[in-house]
Image 1 (cartoon, rainbow, N blue to C red):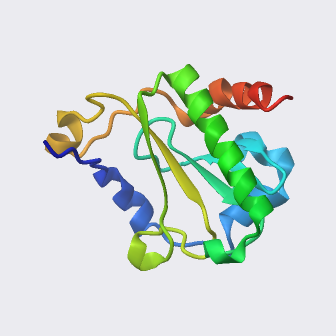
Image 2 (image 1 turned 90 degrees about the horizontal axis):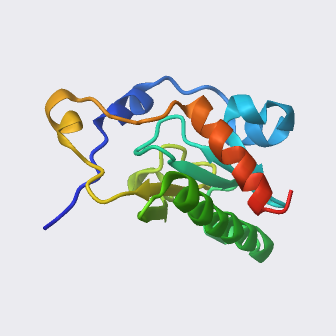
Length: 165
Protein backbone atom coordinates (compact mmCIF):
# COMPACT_ATOMS: atom_id res chain seq x y z
CA UNK A 1 0.00 0.00 0.00
CA UNK A 2 1.36 3.40 -0.99
CA UNK A 3 1.15 6.22 1.54
CA UNK A 4 1.08 9.87 0.48
CA UNK A 5 1.97 12.96 2.45
CA UNK A 6 -0.89 15.18 1.30
CA UNK A 7 -0.53 18.90 2.09
CA UNK A 8 -2.79 21.06 -0.11
CA UNK A 9 -2.70 23.90 2.46
CA UNK A 10 0.89 24.62 1.33
CA UNK A 11 -0.57 26.39 -1.72
CA UNK A 12 -0.88 29.41 0.61
CA UNK A 13 2.93 29.39 0.86
CA UNK A 14 3.50 28.65 -2.82
CA UNK A 15 1.26 31.53 -3.93
CA UNK A 16 2.44 34.00 -1.28
CA UNK A 17 4.38 37.02 -2.58
CA UNK A 18 8.10 36.70 -2.00
CA UNK A 19 9.85 39.26 0.14
CA UNK A 20 13.18 40.59 -0.97
CA UNK A 21 16.05 39.03 0.90
CA UNK A 22 16.27 35.71 2.67
CA UNK A 23 14.35 34.88 5.82
CA UNK A 24 16.95 32.26 6.82
CA UNK A 25 19.67 34.93 6.73
CA UNK A 26 17.40 37.36 8.59
CA UNK A 27 16.73 34.75 11.30
CA UNK A 28 20.44 33.99 11.74
CA UNK A 29 21.28 37.71 11.97
CA UNK A 30 18.76 38.39 14.76
CA UNK A 31 19.18 36.01 17.71
CA UNK A 32 17.02 38.29 19.88
CA UNK A 33 14.02 37.36 17.71
CA UNK A 34 14.43 33.57 17.97
CA UNK A 35 11.06 33.08 19.67
CA UNK A 36 9.24 35.30 17.16
CA UNK A 37 10.99 33.55 14.26
CA UNK A 38 10.46 30.09 15.82
CA UNK A 39 14.20 29.32 15.92
CA UNK A 40 14.55 26.29 18.19
CA UNK A 41 18.32 26.13 18.51
CA UNK A 42 21.44 27.71 17.06
CA UNK A 43 24.39 25.48 16.36
CA UNK A 44 27.92 26.56 15.53
CA UNK A 45 27.28 26.71 11.79
CA UNK A 46 23.52 26.32 11.39
CA UNK A 47 20.17 26.45 13.18
CA UNK A 48 16.89 24.57 13.56
CA UNK A 49 13.63 26.44 13.00
CA UNK A 50 9.97 25.41 12.96
CA UNK A 51 8.40 25.58 9.51
CA UNK A 52 5.63 28.21 9.46
CA UNK A 53 3.92 26.22 6.68
CA UNK A 54 4.27 22.66 8.02
CA UNK A 55 3.40 19.41 6.33
CA UNK A 56 2.83 17.96 9.80
CA UNK A 57 2.97 19.27 13.35
CA UNK A 58 6.60 19.59 14.40
CA UNK A 59 7.90 20.02 10.83
CA UNK A 60 11.18 21.88 11.16
CA UNK A 61 14.07 22.93 8.97
CA UNK A 62 17.80 23.00 9.56
CA UNK A 63 19.67 25.69 7.64
CA UNK A 64 23.30 26.76 7.51
CA UNK A 65 24.14 30.30 8.59
CA UNK A 66 25.85 30.88 5.24
CA UNK A 67 23.66 31.79 2.29
CA UNK A 68 24.45 28.86 -0.01
CA UNK A 69 22.23 26.90 -2.37
CA UNK A 70 24.11 23.63 -2.89
CA UNK A 71 25.69 20.98 -0.68
CA UNK A 72 28.94 21.37 -2.63
CA UNK A 73 29.17 24.93 -1.27
CA UNK A 74 29.33 23.96 2.41
CA UNK A 75 32.32 22.65 4.29
CA UNK A 76 32.53 19.52 6.35
CA UNK A 77 32.08 21.47 9.60
CA UNK A 78 28.70 22.75 8.37
CA UNK A 79 27.58 19.25 7.37
CA UNK A 80 28.63 17.92 10.78
CA UNK A 81 26.55 20.65 12.46
CA UNK A 82 23.56 19.89 10.22
CA UNK A 83 23.73 16.18 11.09
CA UNK A 84 24.22 16.98 14.79
CA UNK A 85 21.03 19.09 14.73
CA UNK A 86 19.23 16.38 12.73
CA UNK A 87 20.11 13.77 15.38
CA UNK A 88 18.99 16.16 18.11
CA UNK A 89 15.74 16.86 16.23
CA UNK A 90 14.97 13.16 15.98
CA UNK A 91 15.58 12.74 19.71
CA UNK A 92 13.54 15.78 20.80
CA UNK A 93 10.62 15.26 18.41
CA UNK A 94 10.50 11.58 19.32
CA UNK A 95 10.42 12.37 23.03
CA UNK A 96 8.12 15.40 23.03
CA UNK A 97 5.75 14.58 20.15
CA UNK A 98 6.11 10.79 20.27
CA UNK A 99 6.79 10.69 16.53
CA UNK A 100 7.21 7.18 15.22
CA UNK A 101 9.16 8.04 12.08
CA UNK A 102 10.54 10.94 10.05
CA UNK A 103 10.75 12.19 6.51
CA UNK A 104 14.12 13.94 6.17
CA UNK A 105 15.46 15.58 3.06
CA UNK A 106 16.94 18.42 1.07
CA UNK A 107 15.09 19.85 -1.94
CA UNK A 108 17.97 21.30 -3.94
CA UNK A 109 16.87 23.66 -6.71
CA UNK A 110 13.39 24.73 -7.79
CA UNK A 111 12.86 21.70 -10.10
CA UNK A 112 13.42 19.46 -7.05
CA UNK A 113 10.64 21.20 -5.14
CA UNK A 114 12.63 23.77 -3.19
CA UNK A 115 10.34 26.56 -2.01
CA UNK A 116 13.46 28.51 -1.02
CA UNK A 117 15.95 27.51 -3.68
CA UNK A 118 18.78 29.91 -2.89
CA UNK A 119 19.37 28.97 0.78
CA UNK A 120 20.06 25.30 1.43
CA UNK A 121 17.94 23.73 4.17
CA UNK A 122 17.03 20.28 5.42
CA UNK A 123 13.40 19.37 6.18
CA UNK A 124 12.61 17.18 9.17
CA UNK A 125 8.97 16.04 9.17
CA UNK A 126 7.78 13.88 12.07
CA UNK A 127 5.40 11.07 11.14
CA UNK A 128 3.00 8.79 12.98
CA UNK A 129 1.09 5.68 11.98
CA UNK A 130 -2.16 6.90 10.46
CA UNK A 131 -1.15 10.58 10.52
CA UNK A 132 -3.12 11.30 7.38
CA UNK A 133 -6.89 11.34 7.59
CA UNK A 134 -9.95 12.38 5.65
CA UNK A 135 -9.77 16.12 6.46
CA UNK A 136 -7.23 17.19 3.80
CA UNK A 137 -8.75 14.86 1.22
CA UNK A 138 -12.40 15.87 1.56
CA UNK A 139 -12.29 19.37 3.00
CA UNK A 140 -8.87 20.82 2.03
CA UNK A 141 -8.30 21.20 5.78
CA UNK A 142 -5.27 20.18 7.77
CA UNK A 143 -5.31 19.17 11.38
CA UNK A 144 -2.21 20.34 13.24
CA UNK A 145 -2.96 19.71 16.90
CA UNK A 146 -0.82 22.50 18.39
CA UNK A 147 -0.20 26.18 17.59
CA UNK A 148 3.31 27.05 16.39
CA UNK A 149 4.02 29.40 19.33
CA UNK A 150 2.93 26.73 21.80
CA UNK A 151 5.01 24.12 19.97
CA UNK A 152 8.06 26.40 20.10
CA UNK A 153 7.51 26.82 23.85
CA UNK A 154 7.50 23.05 24.26
CA UNK A 155 10.41 22.21 21.96
CA UNK A 156 12.93 25.06 22.32
CA UNK A 157 13.73 24.38 26.01
CA UNK A 158 14.13 20.67 25.28
CA UNK A 159 16.45 21.42 22.34
CA UNK A 160 18.60 23.65 24.58
CA UNK A 161 18.65 21.10 27.41
CA UNK A 162 19.58 18.22 25.11
CA UNK A 163 22.27 20.34 23.43
CA UNK A 164 23.87 21.01 26.80
CA UNK A 165 22.52 24.46 27.62
